[in-house]
Length: 361
Image (tube, rainbow, N blue to C red; front, side, top):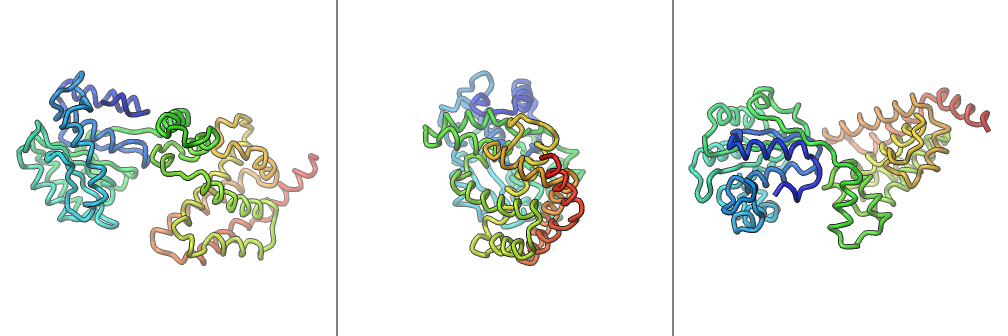
């Protein structure tokens, strides 16, 4: 039932309405950041369409049908090499990227299966996860299915980057937008679901660092996060206080160490959150409710005395550009050296900010 899902009440209203009116579209596009629950909502829709003992037109979550549909998440890990990952229910399937892309054979198999009558339930439902990863051939193949949608099948496209989809695909889907969850919603879920495994401090940290994504909050290791953040705070301190070039290059070596390549993007993202928090503090918002790293508010306020708003803005732009370049397999060591030395530039603006800070003491 939708009541068991947290947040996104507007999306719940839309889905409940189309279910009760028996007007579920042939294709829907769920957009929103990763980890906000798009796939869970799609599965609830699948249960509502096929449940044997529905409650107010929604899946009961108790009958064998609902239980088997829920098991798609378990199978996805084992069957990721297949064209379609089937749940334990034969009318609910999942299409996952085959490596980096969703390929034409997957979409052609989807077309074939969507034209088949339901094996057991009332309707067939197919979830295309990360739909923006379809290559050109796959996207054009999907258009054929969307132009002549089978009456008893429904396609749910999930995407955090809907602009990357063909406009003709977007126009053939009913759009449902999913918003980031609030810190309070995530914290309450963690407190109820973790059974006391996390301290109140860790729950607060995870809820804020997740930036609206429940999936990210559940995956976050507070101890590891603090270790990564400490490293990024040292780099930020070096940048803010006009450190020597040698210190920045040493920081670059630590950041781009091949042993921690899987944590590289996470570290850059943490560095961004620290800079954004400084930005928020400098704008005069004294409330820590707006800060991701609220436990470091005093330390960040001190560093902010050396950083102008203009410089913080440029830093964020440089980091975002480096993250975009990662998609083309750039040399991380060279990219990190360039990033930190570029961020260390425009010394006049930094010194003016620093002098102003000292003058006010």
